[in-house]
Image 1 (cartoon, each protein chain N blue to C red):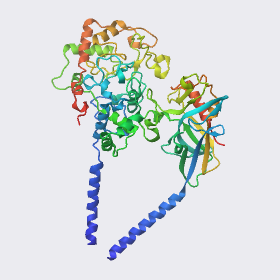
Image 2 (cartoon, rainbow over the protein chains, first blue to last red):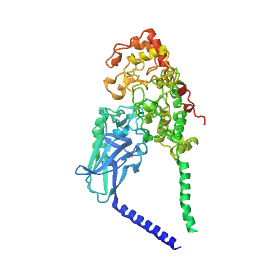
Image 3 (cartoon, helix red, strand yellow):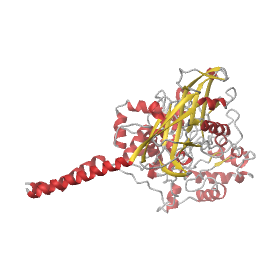
Image 4 (tube, each protein chain N blue to C red):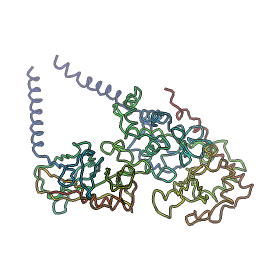
Length: 235
Length: 343
């Protein structure tokens, strides 16, 4: 009986020790929340129902999806933290996908958030992937291999296409048409960062009467991807 | 009492572990590289073969549920008895009688493939199935919808569960299972292989041996042994079929130097994989011989090896054909593990 008491005490002590450790460890990390906002000028983009003014004509947005990958935090151009398996699909139809939460060491100091717009070439040649990279997400080309990095579809009377639809599928991982873009944004807060994706800024840089249908990796797609990356801004 | 209980704990734990292992263990299938073959290109560490995943892939391969109207399966254009290609059809057929623009390729030894399709559009075996599933002239379906249809069946959640440990059906799992079945399609037991291995009592006839020597001097630079393809792309001097105007590899790379180049196909099981070429224009091997001896059309991207044509006398052509017939592998063509799954 005496022996059993000792064993119970020992078990309890071990449990308490591990619980305390877990609490201490939990306190050492904190969250950094990155919230993306899909904007047309000052307005929040609403798929299909929203009407926006583009060159004095009404414009609708039907689909917005993009891959944001390889998130790192930097200070003085040095990487101080990187997310593992860092692949995120932002889909305007799934509001939750616009909020990313990173668990960071509590005392981490950083001044810049860095990520890629698109999926890197190694991942693009590594076969079937799951999660956000699952091909059922509608962001994998089928006639060709590789992910679509940025997909924007909508309607503008400027487009001389069927139903005036523009379809911009920007991707490609193979040089010379590697569309992957890197984005660096300054962050003052250590808790949260709001990033605005200014669709108007991207579309204003295009001539929709000419540039309305991009479906293959090409020079045009790479150029548009550069413009798309510039649409990611912080206030 | 307490001590007795304590003593039993290790045994109880061991039993639990054994039972747990029995229910969760999978029957791994080691991938056998045939003797003197190169290492495969496929990375098996990312998708290790198991009996259950191969079985699932086999069910998917033979199931028309992959097509929009549930009428066409992979096996419609890739029949086992004809080396997993569509015999007699120059161009591949899809749902509603739609006809594509290329000849369906024979499927075998895919673990050694670096790129797929006649133009190399696909960079990984896992992703290959997406192309025929989505092509409007083939299955005209989306992987997203295939996933939803499979989830509604009685059979598939169970098969996925056996293969992956739970019944969740994802695009990744569908594609990896399809890869697994296709990776098992190894053809390495033709008469040629038996001669090379030194199997007792198997030798080339005099004619086959002459053909083999001709093959080595005229064909081997592109159709390299033992896979009988280098996996590269070449313009073999076919005149452009103006009803198709297919520019081949250039369509993918947009590079002029790739114009009219197509994937060099394997010659294994060539006896059964007719019609030949990317558009299935030649129904007989004799026509293929005729093309290489007198039909090559010159052009800026023509393969250097073919600039002067291949000088083969009519006797040479017969000898070479005799050798090519030694590439027929009946154990592959009639392997019951590759046929329609009966259960």
